[in-house]
Image (cartoon, rainbow, N blue to C red):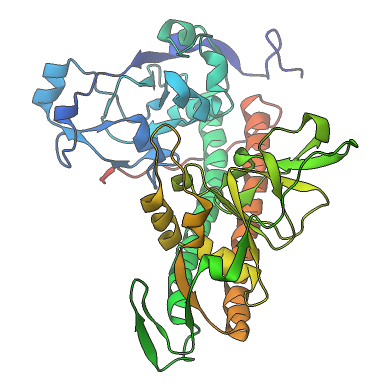
Length: 428
């Protein structure tokens, strides 16, 4: 049967959100009341939605208040099962929704939707209904977007029988649990990578070294290693590009191309005559890009295979390894927390915080002989490959979850099974 405003699946009904749920915003949370780790009620903010363990249910809270605070603030206590999400500003674009597990206070940047008719609507089903909704489309169009309770109450919801709602919620929750396990595996692999980075890049391969030397400003490294500066083993901004008289196509990487540490988007194809004035750094296979602008964001990535006429912004320092260095070994040093902290300390400027290429060149680290560089890089490359594969699988799982949710929430696929309940919130 066609799903639309007129036709609904057999046994389903159309309801306005305001008829089945209470919709309201949170309360102001004065700074002087924040920071308590114990109390009668958790008081959550938008930032709590980003805490590990809170990906679906709010299980960990970073602030607590007592009943006296609730009364003085005139705050509303939201019940377990309430769906919460950002209601104002840029946070709306994150499209995050969570479910409360205990009576909770929420701040005035959040909105809560609590099922008021439990015979007609299951709270987990409502969360899954929200999972398909784009919060941006529920917000008003203004300089500061916001979602109002009056507008939200008018939204229509397709409601299956309550038992089917619970079955749908359980099917989708099982998919969520699979995604959460994948996230946990990725997080564990990233922790392993961080530990290996520190161990391998400062002490070398296990069992290979028994003699050590102390290097001022660097610490203890194997005797067979050299203490070098980055500028000793790589060329920085080796090749430049300028538009010539003849028109050509270039492939441009601006600072936004590195959208996460180690992750780089496809370059933009641009006619040379229209190239930005910052398009000046020629990039080759094996080069590493280091963003010199706002380096605290860690806009660092490597180019494994460069296409012809690949050009980067002057906001990058392009590191090209010399013969004494393996490119992958250089890249892994760039990805360490030590390198990031070094650049943060070297940053100058407030409106436009940046470091100079000379600052990048001055970074000091231990350099093993080429064979050990290759071996260390191979281990770390293997870990990176596993993390990349897991992330790709996570993308597929997420897309599958959305497809399943759409089929079940609209009634194109029908289910019938039981549900489980979440555990309680614990203190962060």
